[in-house]
Image (tube, rainbow, N blue to C red; front, side, top):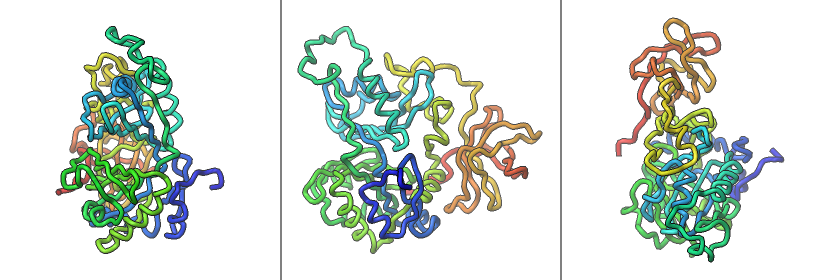
Amino acid sequence: MSDLRYTPLRERHEALGAAFTDFGGWAMPVRYTSDLAEHHAVRTAAGLFDISHMAEFIVDGSRAAAFLDYALAGRISAMKVGKAKYSLLLDATGGILDDVIVYRIGDDRILVISNAGNHDIVATELRRRLAEMPTTPERKETDFAHVAGPPGATLEDISEQVSLVAVQGPRAQEILDQTVGIENLNPGLDDLGYYAWSAGTFAGEPLLVARTGYTGEDGFELLVPNRLATALWDALLTAGAPVGLIPAGLAARDTLRLEAGMPLHGHELSTDIRPAQAGLARTVAQDKESYVGKDAAAADDEDLPILVGLISEGKRAGRAGYRILDPDGSEVGVITSGALSPTLGHPIAMAYVARAVSAPGTALDIDVRGKTIPATVTSLPFYRRTT
């Protein structure tokens, strides 16, 4: 792993006995003790994840929101300050280059967080789209003469400057409330809704706390300068120990997000997939005047496969790449993610299948190395928290 990058929390992970894996060019903890124990901790108490490998960009300026309206599929200009939004970065063919979370930090300041493995692609595309952003008839070049870079908006890559950790699980808010050093949150956690963020301080320095996550549970993602990452990690573990908080790695994160029906780029999302196929048509603002990929994203997708859930019995799970067969033995799809669900106790999978066999309740087969296993199409997600 000598060529891989490590987050500022490397020493903490090593001290906790983490096993590392290559994830998007980063050496990331895949587990500390047990995949199952870490998964169940998140469902019953809380897990602490290092997600500092994610990429972060700041868009500033009077046309920051207008630029992201053009660069992304969603309508970013409609966001209120204090809110977060899931969106997509499409290519010209309507394929998904990456999925991102956008945070409206101010009227003229927006944070974009993308996947670690797509950092270079996102950085390149945002810069290119900033340079080519179309003008509007009412805009005057002199209105933006004081702005460095393209008129009205600037882009800064802050990925090397900040760390991101996540506390996920039903005890997450309780843990943050008890964490020494977290202060001055506005709004407070009691008033912080889902997909919203709060500004505060940790150890007297800036802290952003977002009620977002990738597990299907309540939880928070906390952004701090790199120099505070270790202190924040330690403070959260100390506060959470009495209620069952434990460090959790990528293996648990993957089974958690799979149960929650959350797509992963490189599995459910890629440049070969359009938003509607992945059940993400709601994230695309087709009424916007212009954005990259608009014409292709609006095209008729009736002949393209769509994402569904599959459930089966027994303990043998279908894995990414396994073929899906109809009762006649014809191939009708392929699995993108699959596992034996720790929470539900039976195999689950997400797969792209032909629309003719996509209705919930449809009986199909999974080709597991030459042996067929019966499976049933089901709606996503497989798991939904009750509170």
